[in-house]
Image 1: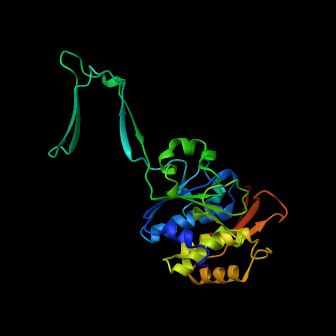
Image 2: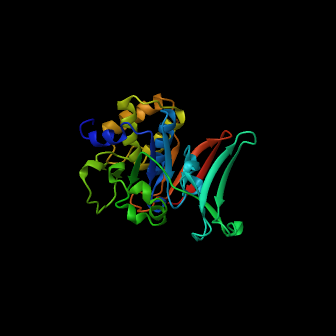
Image 3: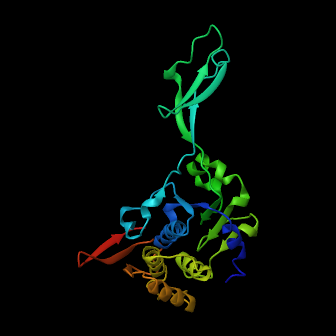
Length: 278
């Protein structure tokens, strides 16, 4: 595995923060389990990750730990003041810190004989986002992300900070193969991540293991899919030994093209069934 995925390992190396981007409209439980598990993995290993999607998961997807970390916006980095510019209104901008009052003071001085800025005409907002790397999951081109791309062009501008992961996804991707990986050799997104964790001996816990087990179970139809391999069983057993718990997932029909499935899990010592529509 190591040789084939050298590029991905190289991409992850020496980075402290990541943004995982996907389109919720085409995502299933396996992909959701992957991004939430990556978030949990980052947290356990002293890294920072954000999960970004224009459309948020459905309430029923709360069977996954950290599903609430999927956001349609990233934390903002900068406070911006905006006002109509007139050179006569601005002579000098200074700032000072009032340590006694614990206040930051920004002063905008107008030109001589001119009135100061009208406070009601000043707008303020947050802008900017920063990350060491962006992982695009089943996204062929950042331009296809619509508002997300428009709002966060700065994180997509450096192609060396982008990595594309594809699984069961038809893509017109044409960038360098150095930052692209096709996961078709795996049974699921979550099997791929589980193998990375195991091979790299990364820190893992019960919640992370449970998410990965849920994703593998879903994508492999409870380990009955023709794509289920010896590696799938091996990583599945290893995740159980790490404290992961298995939920009973029931998908209506293997031939269905949508992501409909039912979930049975224990709650208050009773069996609860949920129908989830993808």
